[in-house]
Length: 111
Image (cartoon, rainbow, N blue to C red; front, side, top):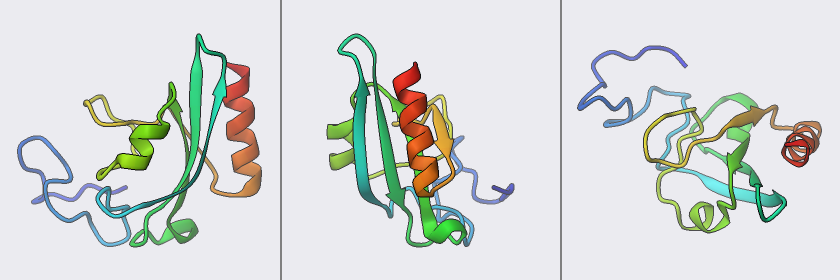
């Protein structure tokens, strides 16, 4: 992700349209997700597509802390980048392939 000056407003990078090719956190589709772990510590692995993103056909595989299934289903904004704000933020990302999905699940099960 490159620096896009002139689009930063109010301290948020996505107050306007993201640069061409970057994932638009307002335009996405949750393809699949899996909640793994124990009741004490759960993780959600999710595959999400961003139609305007150019790499890997816009596919992202991300791991989230806790059971985020309801949040993923109802989300209207989902930024695939790591962030410290109150939005749903991944703790890890993996190559968006079947091997990447398997690695993400192993990662979540191993925590």
